[in-house]
Image: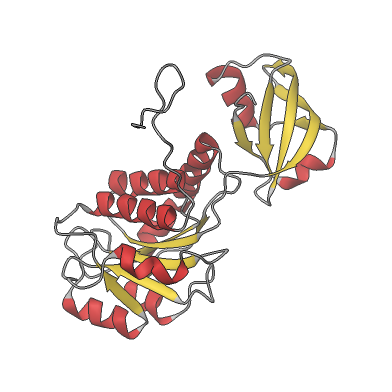
Length: 269
């Protein structure tokens, strides 16, 4: 199947056969992607459905398409991974949102801890619109069927004192901690790897790490400390590596055998 460009559009647009793209997407089709009439794109309603559309008219005033077929949206992992990410520098935090979306994270919760660089919720809440845009664009780029959820920023104590709405029944809560020596992330995932729809919450600390008091607080809230190994990783590296490990262990990231130029497997017989 030919790879098509993906666009998330408001669900109400799909109630008719002819679809007029909103100005931002129309501008992208016309000026950035330079698509032509007759080409096809895939639009998603963020409710679990995808729509193959054929562009029928592209002009300065708008872009119109016709419905070709409705399909179940693909590209979503079985695993529901909620990442509680401590806030960091703008570029670093946005990079984590983008890359973890591409890997397959389902929900993000921005958290302010004792050593977070961002300190006031009223300041970071103003960035929610930009963060949502980053999640949407990353989901479109990598072919996700849904845009990851994004919760309002909160302080660590508040995040730990209540169940995250996105995974209210998740029995597995983990916190990455460089001081953990006994349990690896992989070991902690064993109980859920064979579950048909694994669900967990993963707490990732700031550049300076969590304080001992915060680890104790997380433990009392049911979060189990886990390690990523002997090396100390940067926050953004740890977040991406941890997300990839979780989704791989749960069967949502596949490692394909290397293929040579002739199409034969590169493995030895």
